[in-house]
Length: 391
Image (cartoon, rainbow, N blue to C red; front, top):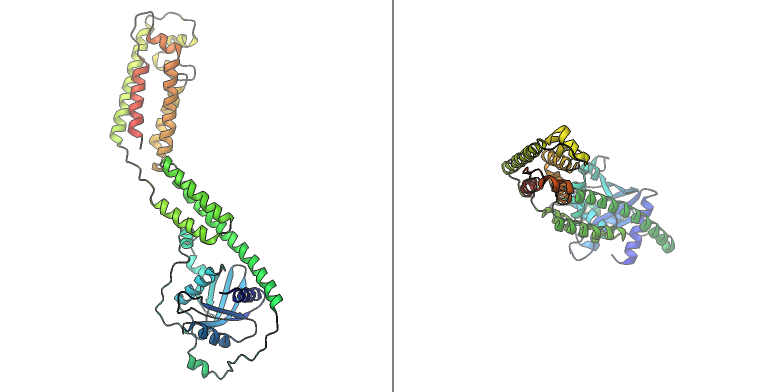
């Protein structure tokens, strides 16, 4: 639409926010040309209908009265009720002019023939919201016959369809109304895009954690959408949402963990741990006294207690590994990757402790001549577990 026509349309919409006004709509046969939508407080619906049909050269049309409250546009049609296709074409046209409304249509008897709320009832989930938004301006195909009144019916209506009214020069008033409508539409658009961003963010957060490179792409695309939302760029946001949904559809499929191999690795770890306890138990037979309290703990509580607990040889690091391993086994499949990373970090901490702790070195190279091997068997067994659960 040219700027003057758009200003008149916005002025009419602003009037519809205050009172019931007449309207007529017809989609243009030429897809490269704009549809015709006229809103006027005084001109009769049939008069407006003649004008829009003349402009579009298309019999598809509807007319009646319209009222607007916030984001809701309610249409009461006269003549033949419009098909769903015609309503969708009108919504598409409004969106193309950056005018966003939920549309509700009634026939001459006041019966509801269409309601955007009814279409969305029970489906206002983040996924539904994103899918609807990403397809808002897709092409609408409609092969039905949609004509509020034929030319013959209009001619036979007995009404004068000649435009004999002399409109007063209300350019200043229309400009003010158009500016007010722009402000109202900006607020509607801001609410809409903010909701879309929140839904998209929720979906992205659920998808994170599968792969570091993939996570980086998700965050980068989300930042681009957020920039479009902050700029109130509706087409840019829509394009970004489509790109994000396509990226989410390409989420890497996690490899399946072989549970038998994991079980075998855990069993081998238990065997190696038992061997370590046995060797420490052999040392107890010759251990009499030592200045290190942990050595006395070994003597007092036995080999098993020597490996677990904060005051043990392994200073609680083995407990952390065992706890994370248990958490991994009980975790939801979607959380196993995150828990596996936590387990890997605990294993790294334990290995660093075993490599640097002087007491462990003393136990393995004790002056009593007893063979004790702690680091190698536990480290090897945990490495095998780590490899088996990594996906």
